[in-house]
Image (cartoon, rainbow, N blue to C red):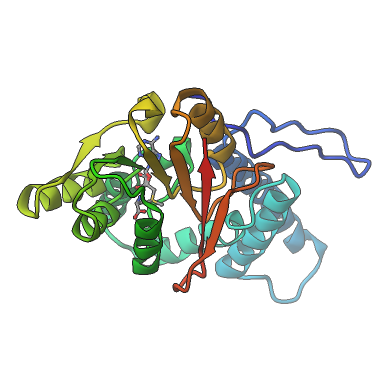
Amino acid sequence: MQLPNHNRLAVRHGFPTVSVAAMPPALTALLAQLMALLAIGLAAAMVPLLGQGQLPGQMQWALLQGMLAAAIGHWLGMARWWLPINLMFVPAAVAALAMDLSPFWFLGAFLLLALVYGKIYRTQVPLYLSSRAAVAAVASLLPQQRNFSFIDLGSGCGGLLQQLNKVRPDGIYQGIEAAPLPFLLSRLRSAFGVAGWRVSWGDFWRLDLARYDVVYAYLSPVPMAVLWRKARKEMRPGSILISNSFVVPGIEPEVTLKLDDFGGSTLYLWRL
Ligand SMILES: C[S@@+](CC[C@H](N)C(=O)[O-])C[C@H]1O[C@@H](n2cnc3c(N)ncnc32)[C@H](O)[C@@H]1O
């Protein structure tokens, strides 16, 4: 399923139009890094020609590059949370090189991130977990009838399902997760814990939501509009969609619950 593009950009301000509308954010970030590297590379080549005085060191150039990359990323319309990534990418690489670490550390870190986050470059949904307050609030929104079916789209490590199953064991709880390590963890949890919930491996965009009375999503702003279209198309009348933290643009929720948790999150409920 095609996700909506969040790099829609109209670069105006009198500059030639640059269209990065079709680019995933990771590529836009790469573009920002390359543009900043080019500019700083040129500056580094020219500064010695301009005169004497003390020349900036490697780390100073790297920090300048980071600041420029962050500014370019912002100019290219990237979300705010890319700012520190763009800022620190090259300085962190320079610092890591200075430490003279074995390349296996980098390979190990890359593999670990890939196992925890899966295809985040495509889904644009990182792993973070529902709080206890969210679990309690979701439990209060569950249908009264027994044997209702519940799906957690992107169930992470399965914590929400496990907790809900404890509070309301009369429901049928299912999760679907695409990232390898969280999926494995939740599989082990469901195999060795109390029965009553299960998790499958896969992409929730391929799942038919018609089977569920309650669909829960704790994702990111990126997929919400597409998720709403999918829910409208597939979910049965009377079933409910609950989103933790992220609204469906332009669609007023039936219920809004402000949570007293660390992130100050909010639950939104829409009835189909
Ligand atoms: C923010 S976490 C939420 C975890 C869990 N639902 C919770 O509330 O604690 C989102 C999860 O969705 C998973 N995810 C993102 N896109 C997915 C997709 N298309 N199919 C399956 N899982 C996906 C991510 O790997 C991540 O683990």
